[in-house]
Amino acid sequence: MTKAVVLEDVDLSYGPRTVLSQFSLRLDEGSFTALLGPNGAGKSTIFNLIAGLLLPDRGDVRVMGQSLMTSRAGLRDVGMVFQQSALDIELSVAQNLRYFAGLHGIKKPADRIEKLLAQFGLEGRERSSVRDLNGGHRRRLEIARALLPSPKILLLDEPTTGLDPASKQAIVDEVHAMSAHGVTVLWITHLLDELWAEDDVIVLQSGQIASRGGFAELGGAEELSRHYAGHERPQL
Image (cartoon, rainbow, N blue to C red; front, side, top):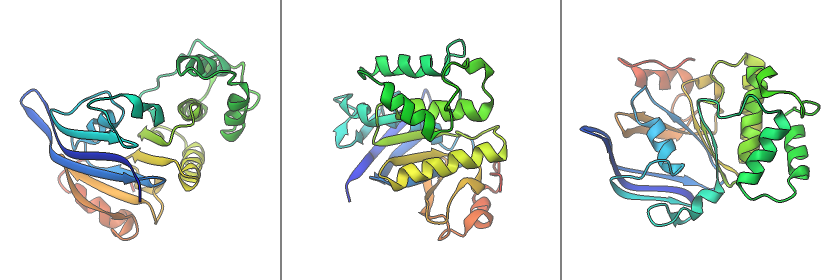
């Protein structure tokens, strides 16, 4: 199966602190992979490497076959939803989307915007200021914005933190549906109730993969929570 993302023998340090050492990771096209681990395990660092925001000290990062060490071309296939909101709250829903479309050189984005607004339950809110949206609708807008360029890979860093249960479930279901239709998803979370039985799960400990397998295969929420003994535990 084609690999959408490859990290190969990656080393990365922040000053004297080593975060990743000879770290390797492969994500299949169309897979839904959840990245779990306590704070400081390296989850956000991996996100930033795939997003092209960091380059490794050694090793290689490849996105859709393109090495980010020599070319940024692979990043055209990557959509990103950060832990902290990157929306302009002074603009309307539609203005945020049109501005993002312009940055990505998307010509005549109206039809694509209309489709995404419908997909994420934002119809009728085109003229609403982002400032006036609740947390769930803001998150839906951020995901819709990330999908505007039709990326093959979607990175999400704790996208449901702070949301009410209904909003969280709607986002979890929608992103799983996108993966079923071929989008490669990397979902960083500490909320085990967001995961489905068949999801590929990677548990990080101190910059290394402690375990990997299907959520159900690894014993589900109860068993996975034991990986956090002595660390910040995930929420069941």
